[in-house]
Length: 229
Image (cartoon, rainbow, N blue to C red; front, side):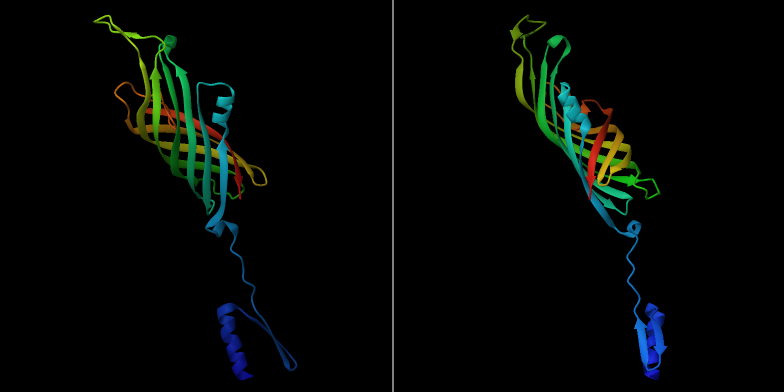
C-alpha cells in the first residue's frame, strides 16, 4: 500500500492524477488529454477560390481580362501562403484601329498574406506580398500596310507569335469575411512593380498576362469568393 501511494504521489506531481480511497478499494482517475485551442494549432485549414473581376469583365465584353483561381493554406490564422494562377487574354485595337494586339497565356503568382486582425472572429485584414511571372506569345498586326515616311513605301505589318516574358512584384492590402459556413468573400487592392521584361524588337506587349497594362508600375485588385475547409 505504501509503495502504491508513493507511486500515485509521483504520478500526481507529473500528470495531476486524482486518487480516492474507500474501504479496501482505491480509485485512480487519469486526467483527460486537453485538445489545443484552435488558435494554437499550426494548420488550421486550406482554401480554394476564384477572382470574380476577370470573369465579369469577360462576360461584359471587355478587350482584356484575367481569369484567375487560387489556393492557400491557413497557418495559425496569421500566415497564409498562397498560389494564384490564371489565364490572361486581350484582343485590343490601338488608336484609330491602326493596330491589333492579341495575347492568351497563363501566369503565376506565389506569396504570403499576414492577418493583422488579432481577433479570431472569422474576419481578417491582410497585408501581403506576391511574386508574379508569365511567359507568353503575342501578336501585333495592322489592318492596313504601314508607309515608310522616308521612302514612301508601304509594307504589311503582320507579326504573330512574338515572344515575351515578365517578372514583377505586388504589395497587397485586403479584407475578408465569412459569408456562410465555409463560404468566404474578400477583396484586395494591389500596387504592382515590374522587375524585368523581355519583348520582341518589333514592339512591346500592350498587356502582360497577370500584371496588366504594360508599364513600370500600376494598380490592380481582386474580388474573390473562397471555400475554406
